[in-house]
Image 1 (tube, rainbow, N blue to C red):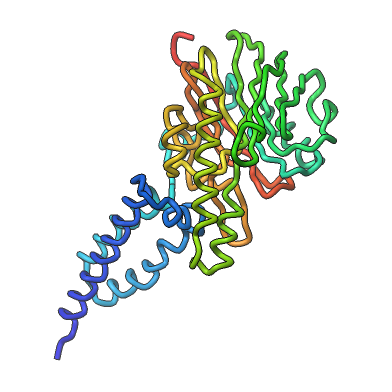
Image 2 (image 1 turned 180 degrees about the horizontal axis):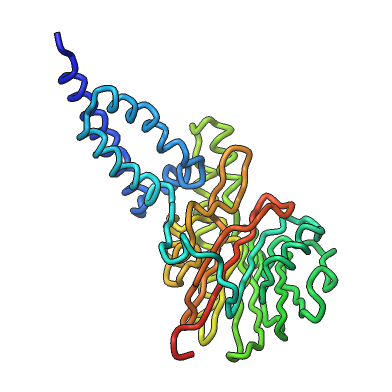
Length: 332
């Protein structure tokens, strides 16, 4: 008895079921549900589990020669790599070398309270940025950690801005005004195109809530819900404190949330995101022992647009630096 037609039918059923699950999970992640804790477990967790069923379904479809199943799985895999896992493709930069010149090359890096290292100084020599924004940079950092002639300015909570242009610190906000530990600072630099307002952001982490959920084996998500609420409140306070950006504006730092987060979409999706627009791959910046997540961002206002964005090398922190090449729109 030929069992191939039956196997093909089951292959197609499995493929369609997997596709339906992928669509449902993606909708849950992108829709602002009442219980954000459940979606956060996936957003902040190892998303690489999502394509694992393909390791079984694709060989099964090949054995059964179910071409319809393979077609369904091919389309589904695009949804997994993109909307579900956060993958990005920028065709204009995918096959082109990095631009030799960017009007403003920006680096944002959470230093993880580590002191400056030879690797960081070599990184600056290799990348040659115009602006560096640091989060969690301890008091030991100084002008000697940056190229000669640069200006270095401190904000609250380990926030720093360094630039080859003259600059100054305006004001900041700290956790005395936020429900959870977080900071933001407003700087200004004098560029050939006029004054640029620079915001260095370090929003609260949800790590305590996530660790509490893991410790209870997901039986108790109350702490995670509380932390997510506090993060959302802090994000809105910082966004309101910033006000409407005027002129040349740069917003970067450790937002402690991926772009799919409802809080990110509420407060920050109005700004172009450098990696979302000009990056390739998944862009993970926060490293853990078993996965990475993109929670560090470079945002900007008009008239900027991004020519290229990539994640830099390991510099001694559990975060990787984000490198964005910004230029001005035509006519500026």
